[in-house]
Length: 339
Image 1 (tube, rainbow, N blue to C red):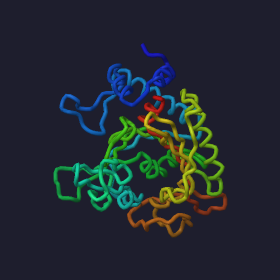
Image 2 (spheres, rainbow, N blue to C red):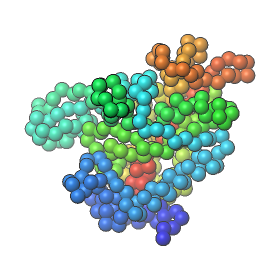
Image 3 (tube, helix red, strand yellow):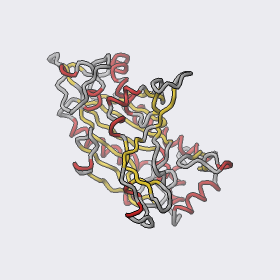
Image 4 (cartoon, helix red, strand yellow):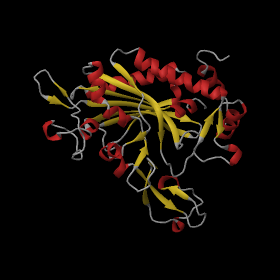
């Protein structure tokens, strides 16, 4: 029988391991993680969680859910569909921007992300970089006509934004408030790597916290501290954490400011969780009658939405809320205590 919070014991135990190979072997031997479809040679970037792994994973998710939903009266939960209408990801920018530069090596006949080419591949053996969209596409319905398709969501956030009005109408929430979701996401990574750190199927724990413009900077700072406190409560040692203020040149197209909680994983210092100020980009992008809403972000004109994703202020003016997004991967949380 597992302890109520077995992650504390697990995290401390794994810190004695010296390298990634030891961790992978331990996880299989003890029933935490198995290579998916292993009896048929496996499937790259896919993993199955065993008897102990699923319990640890569920405990991590339950702790996150409790800290978001049950400890905050102004945060509601959501469980949305995985298959996503292409229009959602058109107006979110994913169809145009959710890609990585890719090269082929003529020597080893392998394909790599530009920033992950091994030293053994010579520069003259590499093809010119080209963009590779990371979204999985699947046919919907009996006809394969190239038009009846959906995407497997690359993140859980977009369905939170498209359900913004539904949640407000059904709960009568007022700003500030949040919508939280835990769920599967899928990214067709060019080169999955570092065990379960970068995979093609994973779970996200995401909160979209909606605030009035002008209150976003203060709210962003507050959520950075809250998320730090939560990771420490899970047993993550503070001496293994660093905060990275993402430079403007590296920010996502929707972000005003992003703080990454960086962790010293066995393979190096990388992101454990990101807390982004997404401004009014998302709600503005998915809203109808954009010209009436004084949207601050640069959004694509939307002729397909049937909802105005905005609220009215005390003077009756329409306002598109800014969004603060703490976003963490369950697998990275699972993996994040192994050094």
